[in-house]
Amino acid sequence: MQQPTSQSAADPDAPLPGPPLRLPRPVRTLAPTALVLLVLVPLAANDPDFGPTTSPPVNAGLMAFGALALALRRRHPAAVTAATLVSGQLPLAVALYGLAARRGGTLLLYALAAASELRLLVPVDLGDVGTPSSLANLIEDPLVFGAVPLVLGLGAHTRAHTVRVLAERNRFLGERNRLLEEARRHAEERAAAAERARLAREMHDVVSNRVSLITLHAGAGQVAQAEDPGAVRETLGLIRSLGLQALTELRGLLGVLTTAADQAPSLRGLPTLVEESRQAGLAVGLTVTGPADGLPPPGPAVQYAVYRIVQEALTNAHKHAPAAEVAVTVEVQPDGLRLTVVNSPTGTAGPGADRGAAPDASPDAGPELPSGGHGLTGMRTRAGDLGGTLHAGPTPEGGFAVRARLPLGAA
Image 1 (tube, rainbow, N blue to C red):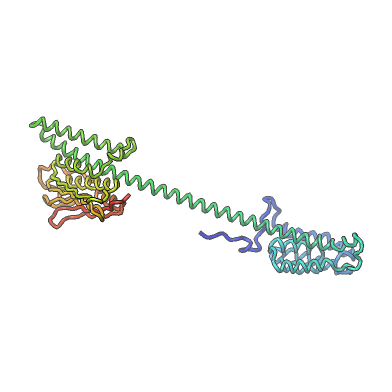
Image 2: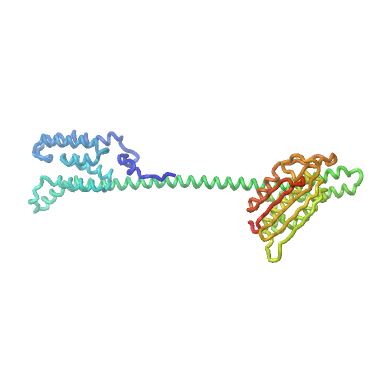
């Protein structure tokens, strides 16, 4: 952002700050000229003591010259002050005030002020200063028409400069506050977007896994309903259990219930997760290795991410490779946690946005479960948020593999 600059430095002829109600600028510019021409010039023409010389016509001409010069005092204050040195006291005082108010305490100002004081002392009989009245007459003109305009002009210049500095400071602070407010609003929007994405990812994992298993068990119960009532009851019990788990997790995500830290999904929940997939007909093997002695266990965030990644990988296997064999391997090593979910090839390869492998081509496999196309993206996001990596793709044998590496101490 461009820093504000002083107006007096950028434009010395800019109008000075003043009260809100001011006369129009042409009136203020020409008022001293008109006053001198209409009042002082006639007085100088008739009074030989009213002017710098003893000749009334010369005094009137010099007074008129000074009056006309005052019309240019805003653009050329120093030149006008120098020109009014040969004019009367009032034009000189007005020009000196204007120079001090517009230029401030410069060397040129003090030089012209000294010249003005000398001009106002002439003609004076310096030998006749023995009485107070004669001394007062000596200093009257230099004081009234020289020192006073100089002091008043310097005061006006200081006031104008202060007003400009405060105005620029207020503008600067206002701009800074605006930028800070925009930055705060953008940060809140980014935080809200990140939270929405996190909740969407969590709900996707919960709904995708639990509802997929419920759908598979419902299909099995539909096939067995006429032949084995006991199997139907067992299937309905599994569906009820999965539904309750899904509701509990969804309530925790939405803040209705707060899940305790020791009940949050972790590595301890992997055997139950794998068993649920086995009951739904998927051949799953689980191997968990480590941590070795002296090595701290993975943090809660890492364990939670591993649980969700395995959950999503198994859901993809249910959708796209229900007849495959799936191997889940978790290794806790000093350089990080390594996770692998690999399924064997099955059926005929086919496209799938979140597929774990090729979908089963068997006509008895039932309708294919729907896919939202966000599973792999969500898994990569989970790993990336913790500073880890995740790669997913087909294996040389024709299956599908998800491999992730996560740092143990990730927050």
